[in-house]
Structures are given as structure tokens and as C-alpha cells.
Image 1: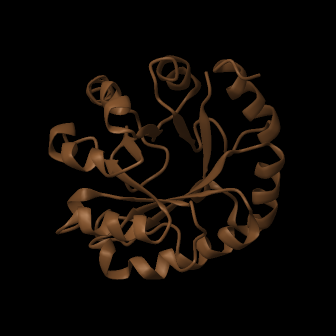
Image 2: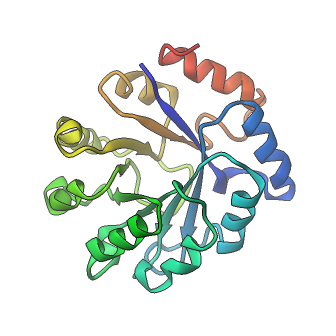
Length: 222
């Protein structure tokens, strides 16, 4: 079983951001997950365009950019110009008038297109977009803040979306309240990767290397 693990960088120590990046690289993190929030689509402000650009300049690892902003198409070039070919950009379909147009711009720029599905968004409402995207980020908490509790009804969403992966050619990722128990349960069911925040990765006494070795052992990679 092979899984991807992404570091949720909004949980990192911004007073020592370069050190955080280097330590995560040494620990062999797969990619850096960057949450951009505008205070409108979600009731919070998180990482900035400058934060994202700094991480992109500092590491050769892929970036996984989650745009929690209204009408991302309006400002999309600002983000795409600062990313590298192959980096992933997720949008929320509800935040855009014509999400398929925005996804096509991401594709045309050489990036990997993705959508993020909120807990209250049904798989049926984004079904056609699943044919366009390469990645689907399923939110197990309401977007906007780290450290939230898992919403149990999201489990049913995984049951509906995982069987569609092979037919439509996308991968499924877990974001929010991701503990070892969730990784242990859902990696064997077909979830391709997990965004790691304060529950597993950040703010603990063990090093990132120790933590990620334990996480990979859980999915049979250690």
C-alpha cells in the first residue's frame, strides 16, 4: 500500500519557516499543503500568497495549494505564476460561478487540477467535475480552522466517492482531523493520501522524522 502524506503548513512555526521546511524534507514528507483563506469564503485568514511563494522557492517538493477563497478564477494567475509545473491547485466548486472554467485554467498552466469537497457538499453535486480533476480533497471538518473535530457523517461520503476513482481517473485525499486511527482505517479502503496537521505532525515532542516513520509503518511502508 502506498500513501502520500502532506504537511499542513498553516500549522507550522512561522518564526522558523525555513527550518520547518528543511526538517520536513529530511523526514521525507511528500508535499507541502498550503491553505489560502480570504476571510470571506471561510471565516478566517490563513496563509498568504507570499507564504506560498516562499515555500515554492525554498523546496523542490511539490506544493498542494488549497484555495479557500471566493471566485478563485479572478485571482488565479497570481497563484499560478508563483507555482511550478505539476503543483496541485484545489478549488471549492461552491466558490465559483463556473468551476470547470477555473479548472481548465489550472490544467492549461501545467498544474494538477483538484476540487475540495466540504462536509455539507454531496458527491452528486460535483459528479461531472470528477471527470476533469486529478485529485479530490475530501474535507472531514468544515474548512477554515485547524484542530477541529471529525464529522462522522463524512464517512458515508468516502463510501460513495472511492468506488468512482478508477472509472474517472482521480485520487482521493483526506483533509481535517487526521489521526492515526483514520489513516489506519481509510488507507486500506483506498484513500490515496492524508493532510497531516496538529493531530499527528505538528506540536508534538517527537521529531518529524520519527512521526513520519511511524505513520508510514502504519500503512505498511516502514
